[in-house]
Image (cartoon, rainbow, N blue to C red):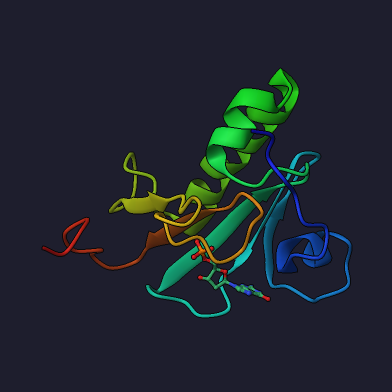
Length: 124
Ligand code: DGP
């Protein structure tokens, strides 16, 4: 079954400049901005500029340069936030996907959470 991308999702509107955002970093392939409802002192969302619903969609259908540009943006954001484990205290990266992943916005995004402990990954 083909992935269906909704051009009216909130992050598509952010990419088109129709909704403001608190940008942390932008490159040719990705935009990173602060989450509107931060769950940790640092909570940044990183989205590709292409029309991808989820990480699996991106992994299967994105071009190599899009994948490289997106992953490099993630690394650069970790440096900007000082959460990289080479000189910081680490972070959690989350990519909620689809119904069981409880994804609210259907445009691929990873959450970078840091600045305090994120606790256990899944509460039992
Ligand atoms: P997820 O469940 O992974 O799809 O999380 C979506 C996140 O997007 C959630 O943490 C809140 C955030 N969010 C939703 N709308 C906006 C918005 O308009 N601006 C910003 N900056 N973040 C938003």
